Image 1 (cartoon, rainbow, N blue to C red):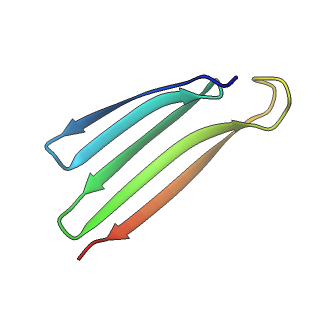
Image 2 (cartoon, one colour):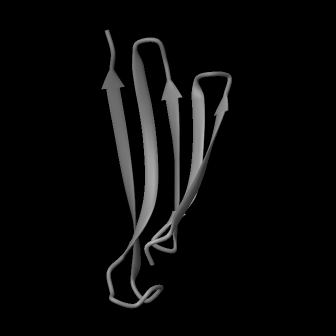
Length: 68
């Protein structure tokens, strides 16, 4: 399944909410954009088998970026 689709909504110019589908599995994330740093959290699914929906696993990634 090589089809992906996603959307992003920005609220108050500091909070970004993201949702989508990649490889037939749900993906979501949020980002908090502060003056000196950005904090983001992402969740996405990957398929461990050759057939879709048999062995999905979900991954969670936390990112912190400091800006000067």
